[in-house]
Length: 496
Image (tube, rainbow, N blue to C red; front, side, top):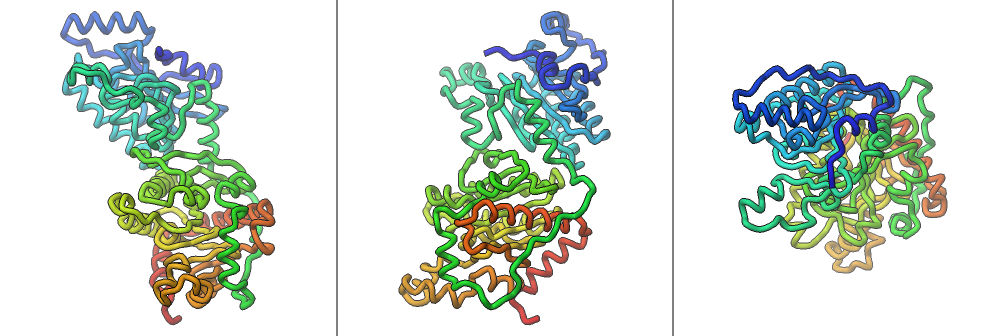
């Protein structure tokens, strides 16, 4: 597999004729004559003056800054001059408030320049960190090959990370590994597809699709356009005519009840699904996506109860949720959580993986999140797995949704030694959406007519409309929001 040249990548990604280089000529002349000769040969071979090209262009009409590796120039290796070019480009993108696309293909640090080139990776990392701290987007496309210090610094800092099909991607290059260990690196590990399977990249994507996906992602980050506010969604007030608790619980367990994927498919305007923690874990039990409901974009974290029926929600799912919280903070988007879980995993691996700690950290991160937050009880709300995603500025619940410290059967076993008394216990515990609304734990109840399973499309559209309305309201609030969020938690359940 050969690496596509930087000029060809730029021509593929950017609108025709729109790219403008930010690069100036490299002025530093190395003292070593053999290195000077290698640089001259690399320039002649690649048609580039360095191992990176930087600049800006338009992707579907939108200004985007880019740092693109040129592998034909000394294997895309990064020396002092190349790193300075990258830092200047990142800082310019930050100053001009442009989204930044990094397209890598590199063996890492340039060995001819040794330790000083190696240390420059930290300078690039600092610039990228400042760019993200400014609320700007940073997308990465890892091309073949990306290894060493590039992968271990600016190649692994993307808010969204894509990888070229079949690309070699890894920290330690296979040639170095073989030289150090006297045997080849195990096959199939340092591949784009394997990294995707382990939640380290969000998608495997050919360069030909990069413009489309970049445009798609950036469109989801646009703020809402000025216009009329969305209409409020009719909701259930604090009435006494709730269905029996057990009837509601049974309804949420029906196979045909719409879940988070159905809401996205049937009612979201647009979405881009992300994968894994970005730190080596993947799971199907929790969905992470950039999503637009009506006019309102958000980061969505949604529990998939169908996937959890196969593999209960575990620590990795909660670490994916925490990635979503970080993403919302960096992109300055509201966070929406959708809760629908029969409960967290109850096995030794979950305990050893830090399940309780991850629930606590999810709670802490969500409570302190500096962006607007909205939680929705979509169906089942069992135990710590539900609590971890619940505290928010606004909390909604579907008409049949419920929340309980344990599955009702488990609570009945503790209280009466008889799981068959679950309907009685659920009624007394006040688990229903209406009960939670009257207690002040839920702000509004999105109606079901009478059961979401028999009206999946209409129900999903009501959910989407309710989310849009609440996000519009939350965007109008000020910095007192966090204080109000904490005060609400302190008052819950106490006498008014």
